[in-house]
Image (cartoon, rainbow, N blue to C red; front, side):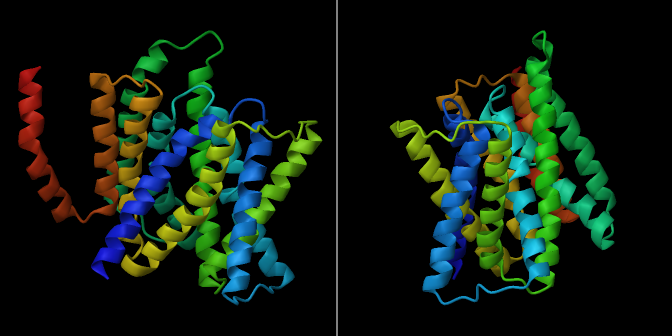
Length: 312
């Protein structure tokens, strides 16, 4: 059991961390909305086939379909529209750093929609995270071009993250109403793909398909690995160890994304970026880790931080 849990945890972190590097490979000849429709359309077909093969119930009422459609539009539709647009102007690793703020957004939205209490640690964690993001993007902000493309991409990433958080609230509502997770994801991905296809058609975008290995390979990876296996691993982990411990994935996968961005996108680390990422991680840990455990972690890493500071 312990080994399986570790495999699920490691799979989620590596898969979701790597999907951010695959998204820019979808930008080019095929419009972004069309690529997203392809991605989740393929993922929905695979999930529905799997549900049929495992004899899961696929018959639901009209109201249930409305809620699954809402989940799909937030988790597999509008949020990715914004993320794909942002990927044209900032590196995938930086988008992953912004996306990690979903931990704080989920807790705040949980208070708004479900009446959950917001601990003071959440406020402190949010403050640390915002300061950290400002430091991470400080070089980009200093070098903003005339049309403010970087700032626009940052805003798109934050809004896309908030939409994802809203989708998580709908998913929580659906699960509390006994809607099965896999079937909800299958229908949600189908609805998300359909709506994005309609939006692309309304904009007059061309439904072309790029046959290059780069585009096709990244599409298959995002659909099958990123969407089907990634969400499957995370949801299984969620049910096995609980949402609090599973949330550590959200802290770690930006590190994977930044590491890949350093190798493949020539992302340059600056002292400000290193300090900013540290603050974002600390803010997220402060939110999801009990106070005593958080202080223990700080005591472990504080000597190394002091040594690095003295070296500079």
